[in-house]
Image (cartoon, rainbow, N blue to C red; front, top):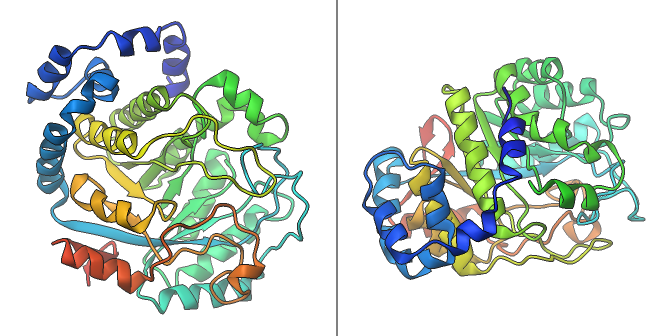
Length: 370
């Protein structure tokens, strides 16, 4: 059994008709339930009919977040080590058709970047590459993870999909969690925006978190890239994916992200924009559907908006982010092509101070409060 079977089974379900048939009474009935919500309840909370109930959803989501996570927010930073890519993803500034000088950090340069990040207090790192196995083979990735262990207590990966044995190699090297975005669950749109390259294989992509879980990663983070498919359907399928993983792999921590697509050099513009109200609605719906779900908020979002999300169910914030290769120490950030534009440019300490003012405790390490 795979989540792919769930996706295929739901392709005959008329989501839009069901969504627009949701009434206020349906939303109220779902909000009154104390037992675990089902996929129909999730649809109710994601429907336009639920928008007048955001305050009630927020209050319940806040209580559930306090119950399962307390007042702590984990902090992390991304570390881009290579922007070589053989894919043709039409929405990405790193795709193979974009002409710019590609960069891969040496192992010593990775340590320079790591030292600069660690100096800010961050101990949870997310390592990113493009999809170019010839440039960033498994041996390179394993040695990079091994060196990063000296600087960080938690190492997450956002790299090209691997098989189970390869993931196990990286876990044994010291990586403990995996981020993989499906980008878009709609198969027709997926094929349209991935016209060439290994990433064009929808099945291989959608089954990636399962391989990571079987390889022994303790945490998985996934989600759609909002701006490609119909946002409410994408939010529904992402949450169903997370619920399936939680039930199939009960020892694995599952998180969802809400990355909103931004225009990058050489990439198409977003086609299905998600408003701030929808962002909040989806986040609240996810929390009510999965009370123990991790929810990650990236620096794609503006500072004032991120600040308001602290009390609504967020559990992890990126901060001090540089989204170009070598952007912390090896190269000046304005010299490094970026995968997406950072909107929240505050330092790690500034974000931590905001969290404390909001009554939350920033966590710089998985095992230690700072």
